[in-house]
Length: 89
Image (cartoon, rainbow, N blue to C red; front, side):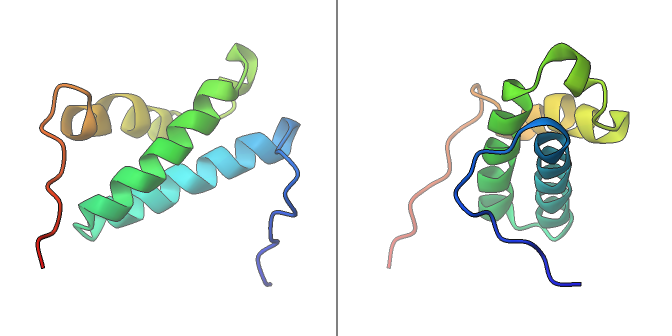
């Protein structure tokens, strides 16, 4: 089944939760593939969506995804880490 494209409308309710989970899973996939640049971008998008969720909606995100987003990835992509270098070509 082809994926639905966002028509520019902001996500709300269950769609927002689903999109948050999808973005976290994509970021984890990039992480597993050692693609840190792409992982960082997807993680930031997922974190922004996660932060927009209410406390009750955050509980609907599977715990495995919440742990990865909030704690494990923070160790590697947190504010206290050295920012990525610019590619020199």
